[in-house]
Image 1 (spheres, rainbow, N blue to C red):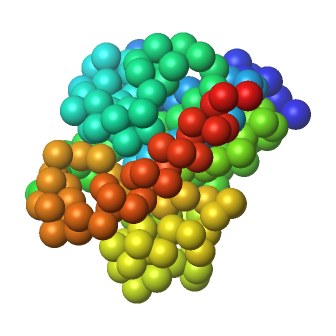
Image 2: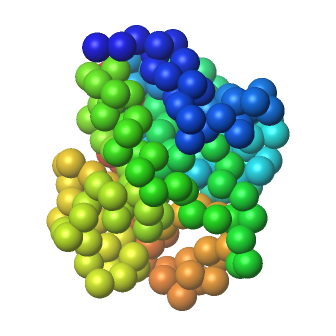
Length: 194
């Protein structure tokens, strides 16, 4: 099994990532062998890439509110890992950022997940993470999948993306904040307490 720095070097040496490596852009993920929770997100946004820190934006603020954790615990405790579906900003599309590159997660996630033996709760944020990890267990829509979150516990906890772009979705689906976020907070608190 490769260690973290060997995996990072392999990611940067991969021909598919050369355009980033040549510009001095590091792959963005957060892995610590003590992690109890792993957040599987989409791909870093431009701000995250520029700051070299995942969820260093309004999406991250909302996510930390959902989890009821502060920035220090989120970034420095070693208890929370973050594995986006792509470790690089994929670029701008017609209606927002481009999706994570296909084939990226299958290539790198298994190696990094091997370094996370203590994980008790993977959070699957957004359609790309749910599509990859839940496969045909997903419901017809992301809303239905998130609403049926109990069907995936304790193996996975599917969530909508915390982006401000989803404010309208959240206002149309008040059950999410009332039911799902309260269960999420409770599980996170119990896991991080020991």
